[in-house]
Length: 194
Image (cartoon, rainbow, N blue to C red; front, side):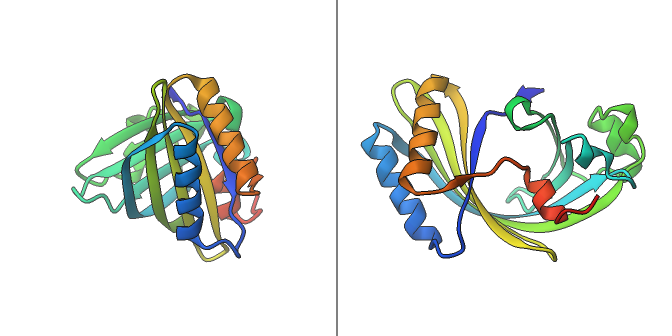
């Protein structure tokens, strides 16, 4: 499992998406980063959990992501709270039967019987940035489900100098006047269900 290092900000409803991303791009370039790639994509995500939502209670996420251009499916298991979150991904050409998913993803025994808990659509606008010392990704995530529609700006460390990433991530939040989100998307998607 790889550790996931990121800062996530809530994006208010009155912020226009393209204007925000243009401002973040310009601000990052002023701080010495170069945009090496920019992508927009749409994904469909299915979340899984036990009947008593124990994965959610433990801060874990089990999900299936579809909509990739090559037709592949990605399965994710994320474990731990925001500061210590780790992630395991499994790519597949075919849908993995739900009964086989706990073994395929090496899930803890507590998650041996899971079912679908939520389904969303997600639009991503990603900037891949690089400086002499650091590589990172900034993603504007637009999430929609039956409970809620919301947007988050994630700034994820990929490699290099974690301090350089941390300063840029905090400065972007201050510059754009964004509030940090301390709960996971899965919790927001469930809308407070327990």
